[in-house]
Length: 374
Image 1: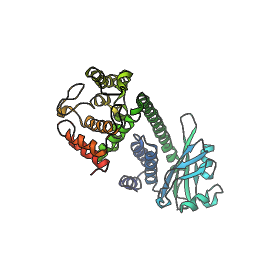
Image 2: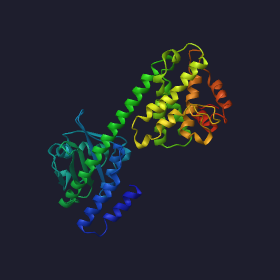
Image 3: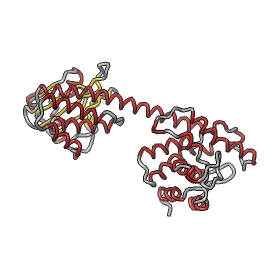
């Protein structure tokens, strides 16, 4: 049990009236789960908070999976050595009965209840004697899952505790709905980004995986630079979308089997500005703010020799510097209409020649670490 849960246990198991404990518990649980959008993290947090609130041995949050007709929990709290998720048929045991009946129960002694799932207890190595089990219901009345609290002490819970857990389950339902909606929106956004980048790459068979490669290299650089998960994800999306402006580049320029003329190269360079224009029309969430400006700047160079704006040094943020190195590296190592792809030695040699005046030396060093290039 974590520090927060221990503190909560001390607060709630001390001398308080039932009403005080009830309100304090609801407040603490609400604060803990109100802003979590990841379902797995939400389940863990709910169980920690509920176990602490009831001064119990452990809790389990089961989520219903309609396709398999199962109740699923990704953690066996307190018996981590069990090592894997728990899945039971959605009509099995006390949890299954509560899920379908929508009726909460307070079980004084599980060994006296013929619904008790003895096989699950045997598999996890934990046999509860007292249980509180309540349904977690969608606002329409549909069952989302089951929340249960367990203890080895017979008769440990009472009806007042059951009422408290029911109140918590209402908050849990709202948090779970929000998390599932958020994850669905993330999947939708991700599929849009991937489909968009794949459609662009497909215009030229020789660069069919360029956006994916740039995304992977950019993520690797960000990781090696010590960036956190959110920033690494930002680089993934930026890598996939950085060349979106090429949708406006004529086919004869994009796929020309030879070096571009000055005029053709001028047309090709316009894709960076087009990227900024297109991406600025997408209403990105706060997490991906600045995507248009940064994606458009992946051809800017530290000495001001890049395009489309001729930005210099500190005018180019780290995100764009990462994209620039990832983009150049993939361009050098992949086959083009006018030349074969270079070896790692050749590609890194060219990158090193462009640092630090044009490309960021720290980003190049990070890419070398990511590629295990010595």
